[in-house]
Image 1 (tube, helix red, strand yellow):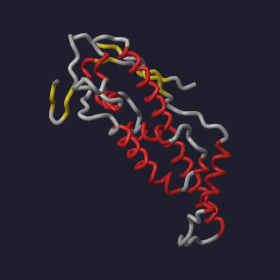
Image 2 (tube, rainbow, N blue to C red; image 1 turned 90 degrees about the horizontal axis):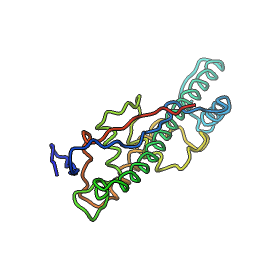
Image 3 (tube, one colour; image 1 turned 45 degrees about the vertical axis):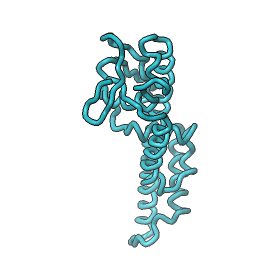
Image 4 (tube, one colour; image 1 turned 180 degrees about the vertical axis):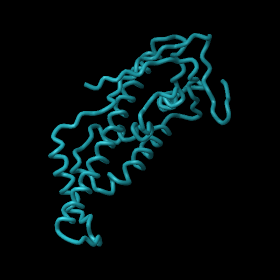
Length: 204
């Protein structure tokens, strides 16, 4: 086992560079009926009285402000769904990696908790970060956490403005940390120099 700083890495026999399954990502998820989404966001603005205590000079200014808030909510929702999509892609990639590890003798024991040191499923998320996989602003732990929280991304009408503006960050991070902590300790990292992978954009 190699130790660098406060991180421990599993030892992999030999010096072979192992190719992992490609990470298939949706770089820009498609949204149908953006007009309907804006209408739902406008309903959130109305029902949650987001303009309360905000002095506005006239009705036109009030309507413009409501529209600005609705569009802002839509952007926040789209970003959340983008993170969710990445999380979904990463969890599917981890599943493929687990199959790959089980089929290779020199990697098979690395994921077994009864063997120490071992790697947990969250070690694959850390591996993506160590490999500096281009994510275009995606927070990987939040993305995986949101996917763990929601089997499918709910419609925007299911969320409060507080969730879209503030809470989805903490919810995603908390879910990821809870998931990562379920592996029996101590858990070691996968050495990034021993693995290679491709990132393939499958956005249609």
